[in-house]
Image 1 (cartoon, rainbow, N blue to C red):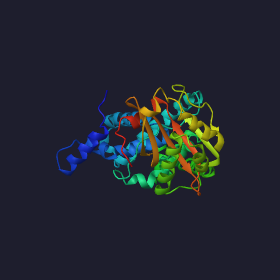
Image 2: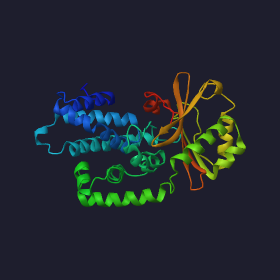
Image 3: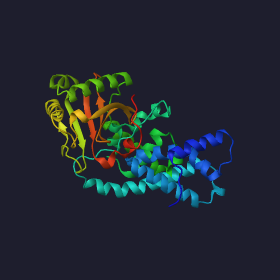
Image 4: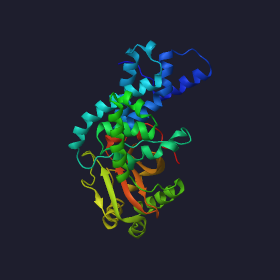
Length: 321
């Protein structure tokens, strides 16, 4: 398989560049934009594993290209990864239609201290936004991501997705209207998000239904993604009573074969916001992300427990936020 620089190798590459050590121009250009390529692919695809594969494909195409005629490596690489991601998304959508239970995006660990751009892009990578993007067509999704999240012009996007500029403008307009009609209308600040998440965690693990009812919006929706691999709710759980009861029941029995007493949980930055990572038996077993309204009540809960979707969380050390 062709070599592609991984994240830790990119870090070493940056050190070499700073120290003015010789680095192959092809590797240097790719390494410089690797994080951007993953960010674009992840927002288009909604899965970290597929995004990494798209970056791998982009590297192979970049390696085989005649780079003597490439005036702008960044634009060229974004074009490659966007088209690869579009192709992968079209085939993935068919599989998602037969998915067992609700389908949620793969959670990823983010860290604003390491990557200041995370703060500005937090909304575009949030679980709630990625769920909304799932309702767009592949072209609309790619155009929206490139325009709204990364600020590419319509002309640049047209080149990237190999469409006319007029069709890109139309797709951007449709996508923007669609997203604005469905996206959460309030974004809690970090302190409020952390406070509510901590209170929710304490109440849920302690089986405190009264506190859960105080935290939950009356029409709160719980989405649980087990993918048929682990036992989860097969349909969205709607309403404060049902959601509170669901979590209270969880605290009284083993979860995925792990006793509650043997389970650990930490607050972590998931998809640009404070979330919860549950671990036990030497593995990450679930993540939780909460959406809040302007009053601080929880309007949606995204619970990912499918082990196939926890790789991006498992392979990194979960740090306390």
